[in-house]
Image 1 (cartoon, helix red, strand yellow):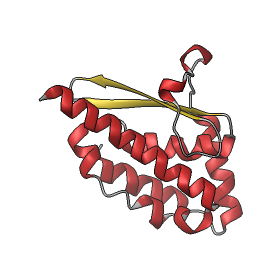
Image 2 (cartoon, helix red, strand yellow):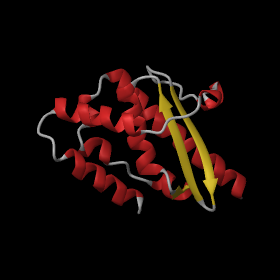
Image 3 (cartoon, helix red, strand yellow):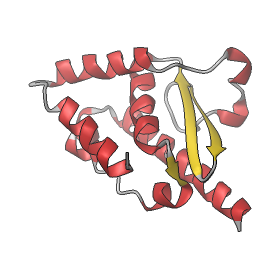
Image 4 (tube, helix red, strand yellow):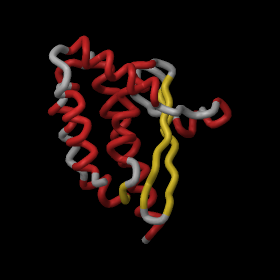
Length: 140
Protein backbone atom coordinates (compact mmCIF):
# COMPACT_ATOMS: atom_id res chain seq x y z
CA UNK A 1 0.00 0.00 0.00
CA UNK A 2 1.35 3.45 -0.90
CA UNK A 3 1.52 6.53 1.32
CA UNK A 4 -1.32 8.03 -0.72
CA UNK A 5 -3.48 4.91 -0.25
CA UNK A 6 -2.83 4.88 3.50
CA UNK A 7 -3.77 8.56 3.72
CA UNK A 8 -6.96 7.98 1.73
CA UNK A 9 -7.85 5.07 4.03
CA UNK A 10 -7.40 7.27 7.10
CA UNK A 11 -9.46 10.08 5.56
CA UNK A 12 -12.24 7.61 4.81
CA UNK A 13 -12.21 6.33 8.41
CA UNK A 14 -12.53 9.88 9.76
CA UNK A 15 -15.35 10.70 7.33
CA UNK A 16 -17.59 8.34 9.31
CA UNK A 17 -17.70 10.79 12.22
CA UNK A 18 -19.97 13.80 12.29
CA UNK A 19 -18.35 15.97 14.94
CA UNK A 20 -14.96 16.58 16.43
CA UNK A 21 -15.69 14.95 19.78
CA UNK A 22 -16.20 11.66 17.91
CA UNK A 23 -12.99 12.26 15.95
CA UNK A 24 -11.04 12.93 19.17
CA UNK A 25 -12.41 9.70 20.61
CA UNK A 26 -11.27 7.88 17.49
CA UNK A 27 -7.78 9.37 17.79
CA UNK A 28 -7.70 8.13 21.39
CA UNK A 29 -8.79 4.66 20.20
CA UNK A 30 -6.03 4.73 17.59
CA UNK A 31 -3.59 5.58 20.39
CA UNK A 32 -4.71 2.56 22.37
CA UNK A 33 -3.94 0.39 19.32
CA UNK A 34 -0.34 1.66 19.02
CA UNK A 35 1.93 -1.12 20.25
CA UNK A 36 4.30 1.31 21.94
CA UNK A 37 7.95 0.97 22.83
CA UNK A 38 9.55 -0.83 25.73
CA UNK A 39 10.84 1.45 28.48
CA UNK A 40 14.47 0.53 27.85
CA UNK A 41 14.21 2.05 24.35
CA UNK A 42 12.64 5.30 25.53
CA UNK A 43 15.85 7.26 25.46
CA UNK A 44 16.59 10.85 24.54
CA UNK A 45 18.05 9.57 21.26
CA UNK A 46 14.53 8.85 20.04
CA UNK A 47 12.56 11.67 21.65
CA UNK A 48 10.76 14.12 19.37
CA UNK A 49 11.66 17.69 20.32
CA UNK A 50 8.85 20.24 20.07
CA UNK A 51 6.03 18.11 21.44
CA UNK A 52 4.08 19.09 24.54
CA UNK A 53 4.01 15.43 25.58
CA UNK A 54 6.90 13.04 25.44
CA UNK A 55 6.99 11.27 22.07
CA UNK A 56 9.49 8.66 20.90
CA UNK A 57 10.07 7.58 17.30
CA UNK A 58 12.37 4.68 16.51
CA UNK A 59 13.35 4.02 12.89
CA UNK A 60 14.40 0.75 11.32
CA UNK A 61 15.03 -0.37 7.78
CA UNK A 62 14.11 -3.58 6.01
CA UNK A 63 15.35 -3.69 2.46
CA UNK A 64 14.59 -0.26 1.04
CA UNK A 65 11.61 0.38 3.30
CA UNK A 66 11.71 2.37 6.51
CA UNK A 67 9.60 1.38 9.48
CA UNK A 68 8.82 3.35 12.60
CA UNK A 69 7.79 2.46 16.12
CA UNK A 70 6.24 5.19 18.21
CA UNK A 71 5.03 5.89 21.70
CA UNK A 72 3.89 8.80 23.83
CA UNK A 73 3.05 9.42 27.45
CA UNK A 74 -0.25 11.07 26.42
CA UNK A 75 -2.97 8.97 24.80
CA UNK A 76 -4.22 11.53 22.28
CA UNK A 77 -0.65 12.27 21.21
CA UNK A 78 -0.04 8.55 20.92
CA UNK A 79 -3.01 8.41 18.53
CA UNK A 80 -1.63 11.29 16.47
CA UNK A 81 1.87 9.80 16.21
CA UNK A 82 0.23 6.46 15.45
CA UNK A 83 -1.49 8.00 12.43
CA UNK A 84 1.75 9.54 11.18
CA UNK A 85 3.60 6.24 11.58
CA UNK A 86 0.77 4.34 9.89
CA UNK A 87 0.95 6.64 6.87
CA UNK A 88 4.75 6.85 6.54
CA UNK A 89 5.98 3.40 7.61
CA UNK A 90 6.67 0.76 4.96
CA UNK A 91 7.85 3.36 2.46
CA UNK A 92 11.23 4.19 1.02
CA UNK A 93 13.16 7.20 2.27
CA UNK A 94 12.60 8.89 -1.09
CA UNK A 95 8.82 8.30 -0.92
CA UNK A 96 8.73 9.73 2.61
CA UNK A 97 10.64 12.85 1.62
CA UNK A 98 8.42 13.47 -1.41
CA UNK A 99 5.13 12.71 0.37
CA UNK A 100 2.42 15.35 0.39
CA UNK A 101 0.78 14.68 3.74
CA UNK A 102 -2.67 15.96 2.85
CA UNK A 103 -4.46 13.75 5.40
CA UNK A 104 -3.66 16.28 8.15
CA UNK A 105 -5.77 18.93 6.46
CA UNK A 106 -8.41 16.59 4.98
CA UNK A 107 -9.41 15.09 8.34
CA UNK A 108 -9.34 18.53 9.98
CA UNK A 109 -6.40 18.02 12.31
CA UNK A 110 -4.84 21.28 11.25
CA UNK A 111 -7.71 23.40 12.54
CA UNK A 112 -8.84 21.28 15.50
CA UNK A 113 -5.59 20.63 17.34
CA UNK A 114 -4.32 23.06 19.93
CA UNK A 115 -1.31 25.10 18.79
CA UNK A 116 1.05 23.01 20.94
CA UNK A 117 -0.32 19.71 19.60
CA UNK A 118 -0.20 21.09 16.08
CA UNK A 119 3.47 22.04 16.58
CA UNK A 120 4.07 18.54 17.95
CA UNK A 121 2.53 17.00 14.83
CA UNK A 122 4.84 19.07 12.63
CA UNK A 123 7.80 17.97 14.80
CA UNK A 124 6.83 14.29 14.41
CA UNK A 125 6.72 14.61 10.64
CA UNK A 126 10.03 16.51 10.58
CA UNK A 127 11.68 13.82 12.72
CA UNK A 128 10.56 11.06 10.34
CA UNK A 129 11.75 13.06 7.33
CA UNK A 130 15.08 13.65 9.10
CA UNK A 131 15.43 9.89 9.59
CA UNK A 132 14.63 9.39 5.90
CA UNK A 133 17.31 11.91 4.92
CA UNK A 134 19.81 10.16 7.18
CA UNK A 135 19.07 6.79 5.54
CA UNK A 136 19.47 8.32 2.07
CA UNK A 137 22.78 9.89 3.06
CA UNK A 138 24.08 6.49 4.24
CA UNK A 139 22.91 4.81 1.01
CA UNK A 140 24.89 7.14 -1.24
